Image 1 (cartoon, rainbow, N blue to C red):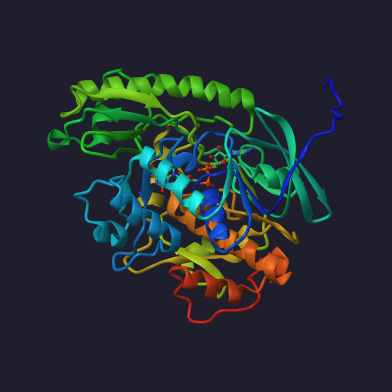
Image 2 (cartoon, rainbow, N blue to C red):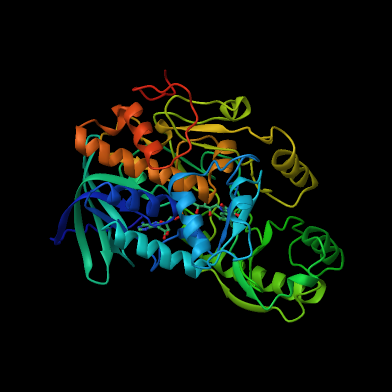
Length: 457
Ligand SMILES: Cc1cc2nc3c(=O)[nH]c(=O)nc-3n(C[C@H](O)[C@H](O)[C@H](O)COP(=O)(O)OP(=O)(O)OC[C@H]3O[C@@H](n4cnc5c(N)ncnc54)[C@H](O)[C@@H]3O)c2cc1C
């Protein structure tokens, strides 16, 4: 491969306590919570809004917020839900208490309302946002990050900070730092397929009476679709007559390969249009449906995950393991979408998602602090989808409520580290749990521990 060596002198951006890279659920929560605790925070986001998949990705639905009896997605996630309901970002007629406590329930929401709410929450917390700014490189010594190099309309600049949170979804910062990572497609036979979601309007939900999977199976039999994909993850209602279309798996698309990602956007738009035309024709209530837009951000389910101080695994999930240092509890099922259109894949998917080991009423599993910490690093955390977990568990905890909770924990841990001098890899987790509980997190473990749970004991 031909190479070019880049040498240039670039400006150093003002010094910050904490730099958060990526403003999706993980990054937005981390930045807001750290800002509220008094840290000087900069939030670097490649797009022009916060919320990540939930807004720019049009994945405008939160799943699994309660365990059938109580809300388990506490802290900042609960606050966002309540405030979204107040501003009309969740349907006013919806029963908020039922949404928050239902077993395997959830709620659709208006992405524009979430964008504005997260902007306001950042402003109120004193967070400096840098939109349309992309992390491109890093300066580090050993296991300490000194600064990150970003690019935006002003050119390259260097952001100096004392602590760094990688919330890029793809573990971009961790990878640049040389943190060992799992990469889908490289370290696995398959990649869970992404979906390019779309916004729909003018749906008459009073006449919506058909099961989408059943309708699509009939459409496949009639030769309507270019691929025989029997699984439609969802048409999520987001307002009176609006919905988000989560349909069209991009099989074997690799989010870590730009050519593959680019091809994925092109094919994703074709598939989204195909489903839209099909629903108009085949679903009662969709005759006047309007196709508003496809997402500007690809809906990536799996790409890169760090190998952290602890790797949450399927045995922990099955055991509903509680950890003394758990920073959140959750109960979503394993949700590994079909890798191809074979019968075996659909059978495997529905068994895992709906049946085998699906958490029942009152059951949760813990997310220990160590899944947020690259092994032995002093001032680097991750938040969100790139956490340290195996394939099955990551497919359960990648959902937005869990990512907001991870973000709250990472932001809170970073502030504790700056105040006490405790490195990320040796933080007093008892103190962290107490701070998170004070901030409204639901952490039901009876005993806590100053030491984090590590994979190697
Ligand atoms: C198709 C699909 C359907 C889903 N359905 C649901 C659902 O129904 N319910 C649910 O709760 N969850 C759902 N999820 C899961 C959930 O939306 C994501 O896993 C979650 O948003 C991940 O949060 P995150 O903060 O880790 O990353 P993301 O939401 O991906 O946010 C990462 C952010 O980092 C930014 N970024 C990336 N690289 C850089 C860089 N180099 N520099 C600066 N910024 C960068 C991105 O622009 C983005 O804003 C779905 C996911 C997909 C893909």
